[in-house]
Length: 130
Image (tube, rainbow, N blue to C red; front, side, top):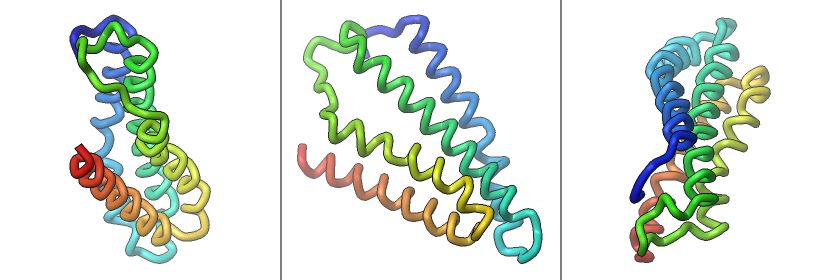
């Protein structure tokens, strides 16, 4: 980025506010997921809700910068539609995981792990292509 404007600062603040709750929801989910009959579904929903908020914060920041190219440096490469879709796919998965948690918090844990692995692999493929 070459510069930031007020809306981007607010979107970034929303992102940072969501990041603050990640350690709490992660700890809560880890504590309850292995206890049958406990509040594991609620913990899984809280965890995925926090991940969803963080994903939305990232998407808002990215969307704002994409819509306002004057914020970018002169020779910045703009992401393609496919790259933007891949980056935002986690939001859809986290949204789907919230109701799935009622059925199986352990399945939600596996899905969340798959999303994390997807983003790691996606970053390696992007770097390898450059």
